[in-house]
Length: 112
Length: 112
Image (tube, rainbow over all chains, first blue to last red; front, top):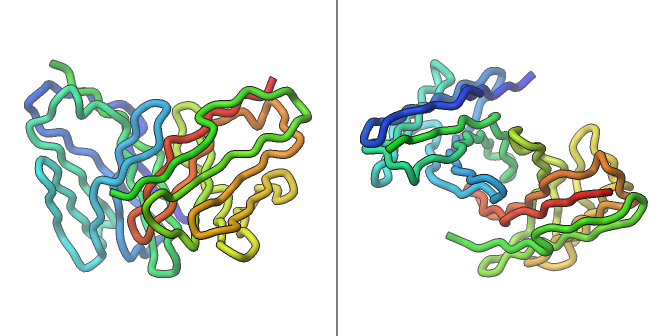
């Protein structure tokens, strides 16, 4: 069955360091992968989308890589700030409709 | 990004009653919207796909007679939890969009 795995343990890092979050998937051939940020009690907010034919995408302090051979995406936040503390979700989609399948999310804590 | 609103943001109801949650796309039209539920510290679980002008598509294990979905216009989808029970208490979130999804702020339902 399809599975999307994110590290369920919280990631604690020091302010200014680079945070790296991992998303692995099995039994899935996504056309694209997305990353979302979710704060407690709020809906997820879209961050980045990367397509299967793209290796890397950047947006300000964010960088996403997508390796369809390894079936893995890495999400980096450089120069992290306490305000980056949140849960980050990866989601996979296909070209058959707009439905997304979400991973379990990883909570990031950036300490000052 | 696009804006999706939900109403109410929170609701407390008695067991056996029904609750309606509205999801509106404020600045775009959505032929398809998605309804999720989320338990504390867990990821989003897709409940159903709401299709404008036609029946919703429910995920396996979701009772269509209990979670009634109506998508009467291109900007409004509603989820009605019928005969609510305490186990229906959860955080309900809707989304709409193309590849990237725009999420509503969520509705916290508590059934006493």
